[in-house]
Every structure is written in C-alpha cells, then in structure tokens.
Length: 133
Image (cartoon, rainbow, N blue to C red; front, side):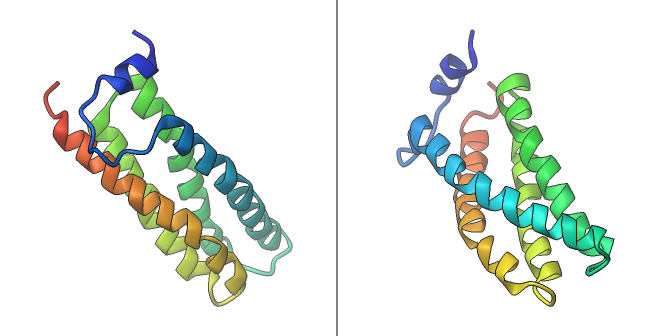
C-alpha cells in the first residue's frame, strides 16, 4: 500500500489539514528555514558566533528531515511523535541560542514554531488514536 493510502486510512482529528495544505505551508516555511539556518552557519564559519549556537539548528534540521521517512517510510507513529517533539523543542532552543546575536533570526522562527506546535499536537493525537494498529 502506498503512503497516501496508509495515511488516509489512519484515524485523525476532524480538524486535520488536507495534505495539500500541509505541503503548501511547508513550501512557504522551508525557504525561511533555509535562509535563516544558512545565515547562522555562515556566521559560525566567520567566527561571529560559537558552534554551540549552531548545534540546535543542526539537530532541528536533522530531526525535521528524518520526520518524513519515519512517518511515511517506516510508518512508525510513536517514533514520528518523538521526532516531532525534538523538532518543536529545538525551535525553542535555537531561538534562545541565537537571540543575543541576531534577534531577527529568532523572530523569523515564529511561523515555523507556530506550525510545528500545531503539527506536534496533531501528530500526538494521530499517534494516540492509532495506537496498536
């Protein structure tokens, strides 16, 4: 069974956004994430910020990238729930880490944080609603 058939067969809250809406939101957020994370990396390479500031950005990016293979490739809802919690927590961490240096980068993460907050609640509910299936 393909991933869309599998996903459509899961029990989900009534307010679950359509897959097309989810995709559109990520298409808007990914350029902001790429630009701001790239900026932070360049500043670290230039020695303007320490690598400890870059660490939460790297963890966030890795956790974000592996979510889709976990959720739709492995079809592992509990592991995907843990992963999205890591994504969510590292947005808070990275925003706090960069705030003293480049506040605009932290502010630019607000839409990302709001979307991932919604997605985290959704993922946790989907995981709970489909536990044991």
